[in-house]
Length: 308
Image 1 (cartoon, rainbow, N blue to C red):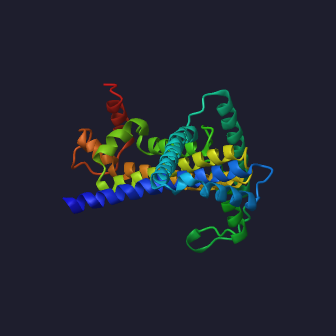
Image 2: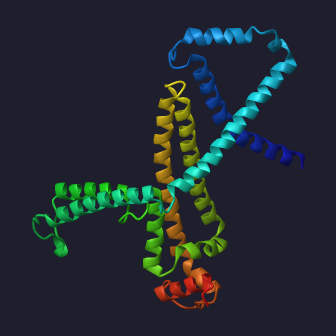
Image 3: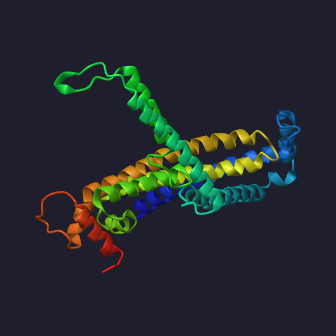
């Protein structure tokens, strides 16, 4: 039992250091430097060195108890800063995935929808302007490589806005909405009511992969929260703005990648295990062949909504 407790304690300590102490300590260090130098002396290394020398020369720091208390205070402050970033990160997640019913969000949704329609029109026009060079083997149509590359570039530009015409103010919300729309179009089932029940029957490997993608998305939101913190710090020390921009850029990239993976895994879970759930709740017999049909999906939605 003692080795097990030691292993668990070591892992908890490692997670505490990596997730809470180190990011918070880095922010505290930047805040201390920014508070010491300010905007006028933002690159004055001699000023910073002199402040550190004055601090180190204080007699109180020669006492072991005072030094230990100072270290504990720094650790607690760093942990508090990281916990605050986690709370803000949760708000960032909700902001990224918000439905957008307020006037500003509706305006953003309309702007994104106009941009998406413009890109979609360009794709349609590019496809319509294809100059066929002749028929290939087995009746296949040959398309010039340059034209095909142009169509692919336009399609990627459109999909960077949204996979379907936007109905949410952010890419993140539209990506999850696209997953729900695709599941409903394929199986006739409401993903919002299906997912909590499907989660209960998923095997452990699928649960781990989905949880990992969700954790990555949460980590990206926390990084965006740190970007907010560094942006506020830039009011006193402008180089912190560079850290804010870097954190925001990485958070956006990682957040998009993580949410795209999460939405894909959710769709895959419905593809692979949706029929199993229908069998478990009695809408399909185990020996019934074929895929999950739309009428069965409608029945699942009705059962899960408690409509019957």
